[in-house]
Length: 539
Image (tube, rainbow, N blue to C red; front, side, top):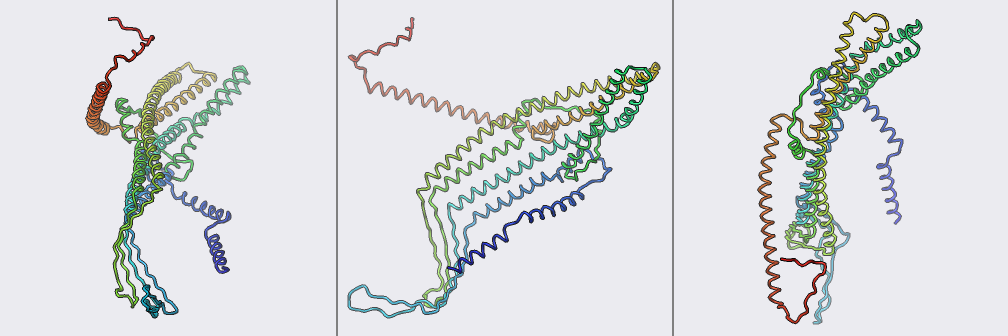
């Protein structure tokens, strides 16, 4: 007893020492990872002067984004789990070798049961002191095989589910990359056109003070003029701050070191694209075909259906078929090797009520997934309409900014060409016009960027990469073919429903006729009083 307690204590100490970590050990591990991760991030960088296009940003994001890599690794895990479940359908193959030795001879005696006067038999030996048994056992459980088969199907669905997670994450990554890319491009363009003007703003403060001291403008006018320049300087400075923040976010999305410097191709802001869309109903149906979230719900529903089938299989008796080969070196045996074939069946009847309620639970879950699919479909259609409405609103805002920018630039050109602009006060007003015209120019660039982002947001809600004519035509053909097939099935289901309804009506009429023939009317029976609330019809 003392030895067993000591062994338990030693085992507990070994487990505690080998499996538990102190906070200092975690802190040291975190310190090592902090240095390693920082150094690793330094290598993931690009040339400082490299100008990235939008397509190059897409390629870098898909190749280097860390969140997307995590989804890819989880997808590999799901594939390995599927292989694990497939191998679970193999039968059991157990190989064992049992060697035992006794310090004396294993012997036994026997006694006759009949009373014929014979005494006890003498002792005899039927086993050697050292015996070795070698055994190979191959067994297959029918219930376990069925459960392993459905587990394999569920693992395959989970692998497909992970693929949809990765696909949706990639779509969201593309949208985020577009959003931040045009923020960087617009801020980059704004910095180019506002750097010199910010220097001019600083020079205008001295001019305002000089005019105020000379009495050319009142102190109130000097205060208003200084305030206008300060407000304009703040707005122009905000573009620089937004540029740095957008650069950090873009580099993080591309899987690069999150510095504050990156250059993108802002020439895309010089052209205004014209996006074409199919009719709204077709876009809604395309979204219902391609959105990964809807695939996820369908796959989860099938996983629950397979869970119901697993529950049904669990309610069958457990039949186990086996083949057993045994070899023994016991010299007293008549045969030293033999093979056994057999079938074992066991049935635990008390687990049936439990399995039935488990089946009812997963069946209800299947119904819930069906309604969730419809609810998600309605939400997806709403997202498509909202994204399209946002695109139209962004286009209207872009048109307004284009008109404002052109108007301000036209008036500024006329003012600069006018020969009547003389004096410091006129130069001050002209500086205001330049600042406001530049601000409208920057707002135009921001609107163009938002217009691109709105277009990619529509693609994101549709779950596709482009709206090319060939893509739309192919999807439309698939929808038309499905409508024809669905119409045939719907027609068949309607005919079956009408036939069943007519058969039920004929059966009800036959039952009423049989009841009337079986129960004749008694002439002496009291009449049924009429309902006073019902008015008699007059013909």
